[in-house]
Length: 270
Image (cartoon, rainbow, N blue to C red; front, side, top):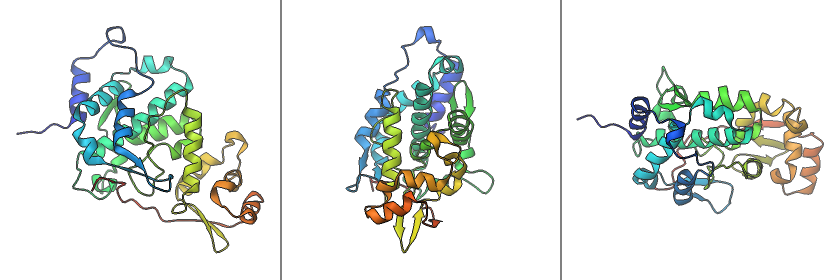
């Protein structure tokens, strides 16, 4: 007997029985279904900068997961193109996070890392396992071809989550148009405040490899930022509690090194 995962059920349903925009309810830009899932199954740790996901709980929320995937898949390219920038960004961020969780659930609990879902020939982020904007895509398409290429806001790297402990926190709320800028800024500040990922120690600034992998995004001039040192100068107060260290950060005089990335699953339900 062939067991079909929920995401493929959504894909096939979308392909065989497309629903026109006129025949369905307006898209929910508040993301009530996704918000309900993360509110129930994602929690902040006591430090308020890391979060954990109860994947076992999410897996049991079948009806809500089906609704989330169905709502995302039903949006056409034409409809998406009519939205403003903030609506588009919130959609893509929520879609990335929801689809990443869905990907984890295809093997959960029999995995320790999202990398267990890849192979020598194909990474998890290159697997075309979902329909979005009327075509089949992979997660890298959302991140690199859409979010990075179109909007050039480096804070998205603390908003989209790879289901790993080394990642920024998955928020226990959906991204929405009215809160998007505040959520992106809050996510950035929480991430740089996390001393397991970004810290001053022994005269050096040790930071997440995210700032190495996507350094060019932080140096393209967003809000006047032209170097990775300027990024850490802006967030000096979040990075260090010591006023003297903050002064050095703002002077951009501290050498920077990059930490190894922890790909362990951000599972809080075991």
